[in-house]
Length: 421
Ligand SMILES: Cc1cc2nc3c(=O)[nH]c(=O)nc-3n(C[C@H](O)[C@H](O)[C@H](O)COP(=O)(O)OP(=O)(O)OC[C@H]3O[C@@H](n4cnc5c(N)ncnc54)[C@H](O)[C@@H]3O)c2cc1C
Image 1 (cartoon, rainbow, N blue to C red):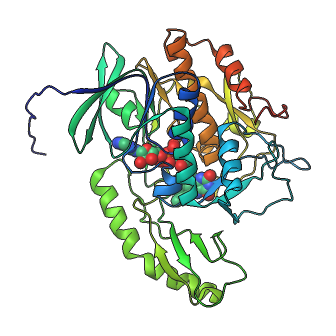
Image 2 (image 1 turned 90 degrees about the horizontal axis):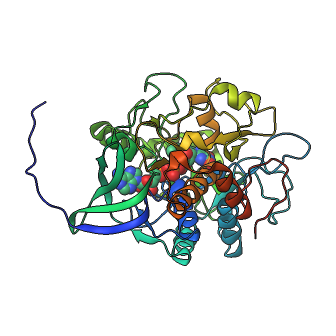
């Protein structure tokens, strides 16, 4: 490939913060709320004009993972900020009906349902309001460009925005970009499950349909009364971190969209009058990079329900695809250790969200958005504590992190009493 050398130029330093988070998806927004609530001056960098990531910008309106699948209790395994968000959505009529089978759980604090359909506009509103209330400095319409690294320590990042290129400095950076963009640019080793490997989850374009004259009995998606959000076409194997493949994937998925609805109508005649009323700005990208951390979660950890001394979140979701079927876990849940959020090689960096250090099988479980928010809350809290105790993520006092998380409503033990509001 031909190349071009950019001229060297000085950048304005637009922020100097305790914590900067890249990516305002479920992981990043929870991390930002947690960091700011714990006293850190916090900026949240997001390329779109709202928060939610895949939940809103890719219209993935179904958030899963509050409870395990073990009868008879189906115990709740995630609380904290994820629970707060859903309870606030409930207060403003911001929930629809999830297509996942629901048990008759009471929806009080500490007794959430496994899965919720979210009104994506109200999700944008509630999460932005919670960031605003916590004092997060929202930097929307900012594109992370590169990492500022000195002596294997990240000192800041460079963003592109309408004002040009800016440097933002921070004591701790959290990579919640989903794709691990910051860690990859900073030089942390990463891997991807090969795009042509069967177990890799495919990408898909979600879309919103209105029903027309008659509301069908069954909507085959997330049900919002007079409309639904449905799972749409896949572009086939692609790498969401490759600019050309990402663009080509959008084209393929969008050109298949109306054909996809026609196929749904043939399969489900009750959808005969349905029409597309919204597509998201971004194709739904299920998986890209996994960033190498101090520990890599294994298939055995997830299948055996392994507990870790440095637990910071719990996942009890099924492994959805790897074994060729939705494999429900036969135990109450397995721990996500803090070390999966601490990247190898680079200091002052934490990883949150779907790109944490994990094999494919556990990823297919903890990628569900409720778990992702729990991981985000842990990362944000850890970052704030690093600033408060003048240490690095690698040296952080993990029991202090765990105590802080539990005192703020997070669940680190199965069956523990809820401390949520
Ligand atoms: C098609 C599909 C179906 C799914 N189904 C479900 C389901 O039914 N239930 C469920 O719970 N989960 C589901 N998931 C999984 C879930 O949505 C993801 O695992 C989760 O959203 C990951 O959260 P995250 O915050 O790590 O990343 P993301 O949601 O990807 O958020 C990353 C954020 O970072 C921002 N960003 C990225 N790069 C940059 C950059 N360079 N500069 C600035 N900002 C940047 C993005 O705009 C985004 O806001 C599904 C996902 C897909 C794609």
